[in-house]
Amino acid sequence: MLIRVSEIPDDGIQIEGADCLPQPFDDPAWVLEELSLNVRKDGDVVLVRGALAARVPLVCGRCLEPFQLRVASAVDTRFLPSPRGRAEERELEADELETDVYEHDLLDVGALVVTETTLGVPMKPLCREGCRGLCPVCGGNRNLSPCACEARMPDPRWAPLKGLADRLSR
Ligand SMILES: [Zn+2]
Ligand SMILES: [Zn+2]
Image 1 (cartoon, rainbow, N blue to C red):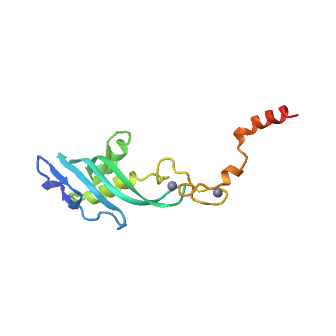
Image 2 (tube, rainbow, N blue to C red; image 1 turned 120 degrees about the horizontal axis):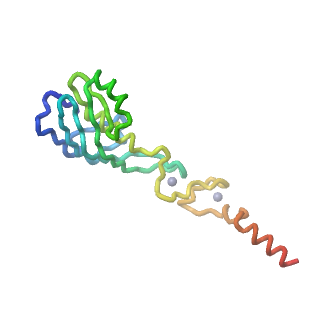
Image 3 (spheres, rainbow, N blue to C red; image 1 turned 135 degrees about the vertical axis):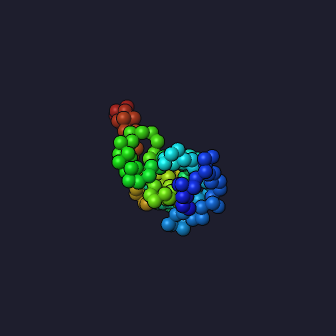
């Protein structure tokens, strides 16, 4: 979806619903589920605020099982016209507002949605909080079936007690 900046009305544009943006992602497995954006113009600066949610297929970093993650992101981005934007972008880096640029009077809403969603994907995704991962001994998925490997390995926490037991039994 491209918005012509010079045609943004004074009261802004409201983009409501994921249907407004049919498949912005390159990967067809990524699905945009919610979209609510307000696009406003302040001179030649464009402010985009709102929220989005997408469903993204990932592989768990611990148990290696594929799962679907719902990525929800708040959007608060300021767009400056290029090339002025490029210079100002560097100056404004410390600013809490995200800054981007638009070129040739065109604002690419799809690209913004892709960027915001990608930023919301964790580097080390987990299929669930407290995923028990794979057993380092047998390689089994410990979420599905607790294996007996752990029980057979000596637990270092019991070592001091074992020493005591040995002394007492002497
Ligand atoms: Zn997992
Ligand atoms: Zn095991």
